[in-house]
Image (tube, rainbow, N blue to C red; front, side, top):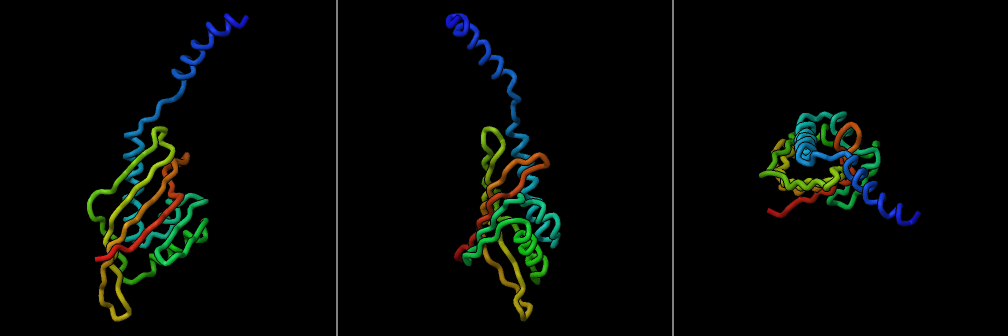
Length: 154
């Protein structure tokens, strides 16, 4: 009996490996880049619903001032703050760094962005940001689970 199991076990492993669905990591990377671009477009348009929708239900943001926000209400407050900031504009500086896990279920993006805002006097100021997102593949697309950003010195 044990000898029979030893003979058929490798065949079972081969079948399992062959039956496991393959993931097209390149296609998932392309979808992730679309979501990453949609983030900047939504922020620039003041599109609160799209911004909130790009975060996972359990998403968390870490701001340079030490503020941490988690969950849908915190993401909505952030998106509404973006939409109400005078002169708000993000411009990507170069191409993002993108890594997708072999199973294409987790990924990260790292962007450098110029953020323009208007002060109380209407004068525009520009800050260089570094924005790191950890993404999780969910049934309806890529969602941000961790958002960490910092202001870079000029």
